[in-house]
Length: 145
Image 1 (cartoon, rainbow, N blue to C red):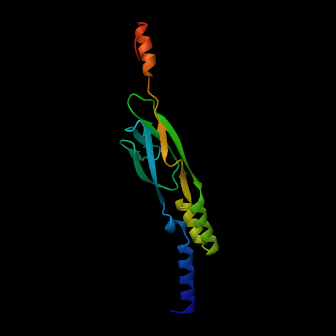
Image 2: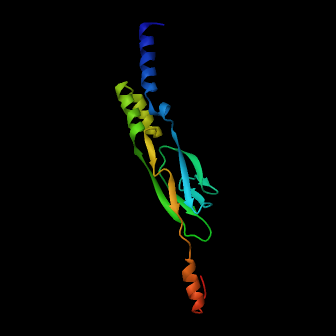
């Protein structure tokens, strides 16, 4: 192996080694919680859970809206967005220090420098009709909801 080939291999290894895609991965574990538990969770990106609480691995670059549905309760939606935070910024800085322009491009493409917010995604579901309002209507002779 000549000196040029060995030097190139070392530079590539250093650039990729600092890459956030390798150190952090391209997916992130997210938790989805509802009070009361047992709601169905779906997202605009196709992620879903049949009942909360649940957790899923989601692509770091994905931004989406989460909707929680449970019979007897109003549906609730929460926007989930991405942002560069601590470890992601450190991975990007590592790319810059190691001269890894390729690593910066890979991290930007895969979203490896991003984290989701909020995480966990948590909602308190509101009943369709409050029990006290239902009882008051029935006492007045009005039909319940």
